[in-house]
Length: 248
Image (cartoon, rainbow, N blue to C red):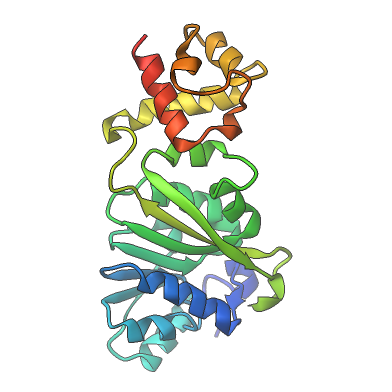
């Protein structure tokens, strides 16, 4: 009997079968503390490595047949039938091999929730690379940077999955900052500001900022070169620029 959600292709499932990569993800999780939430365990290759860590582990799987098999294989494991994209990420550590087609919406939802501290995710390579700021920051990364840090832990070749996807994967870790660069109460205003700067007209951050009403000198006070591009700014520079404009 087939799942009501469809087969592997329909669910966007590409299972990681490369043992060294599975161990790398497990080792990253081992550096964290507290209960773990695993998203999309599939056949349980990573789950089997997380269980020996001896921590409270919950898994959310969309395929009800795999839910049943995981429960049979690991009696006592908290396996729940559900969609990881709509789950509540309410444990300190979130880990998972994320279906590539839902990577961006899942990240947006994850970054909007407050009850987790560390996320170790296997995502599409281009998404992992961009979120980690390799080659320059994106709007989403810059919007989140005052409250989260992003780190890339390596590329995972497509042939290390089954079925083999059309693109490589990447291991991305996200950590909630212990000391945020900006108050959380300013997040919505700051996110609008970042979006406006990234989509604003002009060549160079100084012209872009002044075109949207910022006074001359704000960029200089933030310690940013006038001709820098939005993608070139560090999290600290974004926060400094926001504060400099707020002081006008």
